[in-house]
Length: 276
Ligand SMILES: [Zn+2]
Image (cartoon, rainbow, N blue to C red; front, side, top):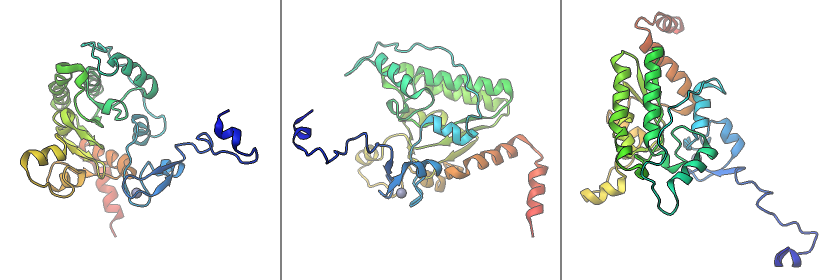
């Protein structure tokens, strides 16, 4: 009971937060139209109105890439969780514990900006080793603001480590593919994210090292429109293909087919067949 419920007539129902769940409607960051969440989900979290690709969780990403539940999780090596005993407003160890409980694992932008620490570096190395062992392609999907400052220099060391991991795959002649998603910046863009044999990007994804504002203030110049966006990087040769989310599964399949089979007779055959 509070002063409002005491004075409001009993017939009037107060609309509480519970009656209208937060996740029923989402505002599109691109065109600001209100989107019905279930419809948005069915459309792979892409706005039907303007095509804006909303950020998605690692879990949602895996489902889109591999089909619902059709993938295996691998055990990752245990790492030191909080080597510096870091604390700002809160203890880093507490943040880690809560984040892991709420979101699981993966390059998860929702958790501390998807920053790369020791565990992320270990995950990339483990994935590369597994790819080599299974003679499989390695596909990495970064969604990260950069290195994790709470782990100091140990997070920066992950930059050369992940580059070496990618090299390990390449040296075996196996494809290393990166899908740049929104955002891929800082230490991640300066390491494993930009050395793919094939670099794909999601439409509109921000990809770059330093933020546009920092660059503008440093060089005292206005940056061109669309700077650091996937399409801009594609126009300037930094990205091989900008792939809409709906086409991702098929595009990856086609690329892997071409890279893994030096004589793709099946693909050539189907092209000939479809010719008039
Ligand atoms: Zn939109």
